[in-house]
Image (cartoon, rainbow, N blue to C red):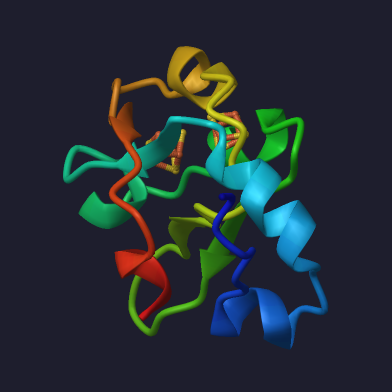
Length: 103
Ligand code: SF4
Ligand code: SF4
């Protein structure tokens, strides 16, 4: 018997269907930004945003420093394009760990 599809609060807020959310979960990896990121170290950079084919890397404003990258893990396809473009190798693919990120 197949388990019923569920929908996270995030997907519910953004109007995404349970079917679409479940399809995304079939992708085993997502991009994660590490501490070496230039923007995290007060150097302006948004190269990863520009190269992402899914347009799932957003930048959060902050006072006193460059905007910080944030990957929408629900929509990341795990394609790895952002890894190649990052000038300091700060992005890696990580295995998805279930619905913990939606809590
Ligand atoms: S390309 Fe790399 S260094 Fe630049 S913002 Fe993205 S993660 Fe940070
Ligand atoms: S792995 Fe691909 S889809 Fe995911 S954030 Fe990087 S470029 Fe975008």
